[in-house]
Image (cartoon, rainbow, N blue to C red; front, top):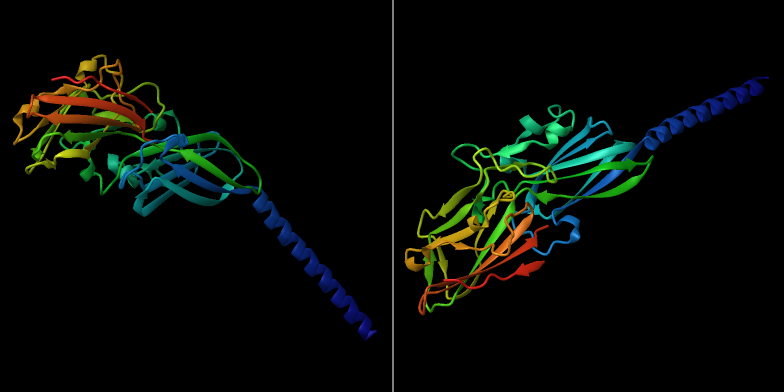
Length: 335
């Protein structure tokens, strides 16, 4: 009788253990079926069609990712900092609720004065039209852009992008590529010095095509060029400037600007050089002569200037607009 009771007790314990184990497995399975793992790939060379490389400090230094539900309610606000700037980043997020999701990315937010106080967790609770149409405006006296290449080492360049209406399925492990774009355009000035001697450039003057503002996110309706309209701008060296050796000087000067909008005045797209040693090159030269009157975000404009003042004062400009993310046009020589 005693042995029978022991057997019954053991049998009851086994049934209870099996039932408890079954309940734990069901709860765990239910939780995993309701979420997904998301592997995000961010690429500044949008759509894989980039022909221009992303140089040092032009990539992603910091990154903020919002994940929202179909109604735009923020479910995740993730911020990452990196020790370098790379053109491509990956980020794995566990436990994302399944269903229709939207993804919004802001990289290098501090480069245009944004901070966690404005973008951080608990601050942004909904991504809506007002958020997506926000405008970056230069502060008085210390513009975010234009900037020279040697000025972006600390904060980098603003980069944004989005991918909407992504369906996450139950228990999945999905990889999603989000093409992000620089919110500025890049201008590269190459100088072919055909003289026998070195000369110096201590100023670069741009015509009236510089904007003080832009939309933070791409693909907004039209352009925003600021309340003051387009203006001219001069980069002035605090010292002697930069040296232009005889021969070809690739990337002699590089700078970044907001997209220009479609200006009605093509003749405003000019560039001029000032030199303490060759004053003859001071006259501004137009570089868009084929009907183009704009420069978009995430484009790279390459200007080739040929300088030779030994025979006659000649500055030849050729420009090429590349997807920074190719068609080239040659401008005839002019004196």
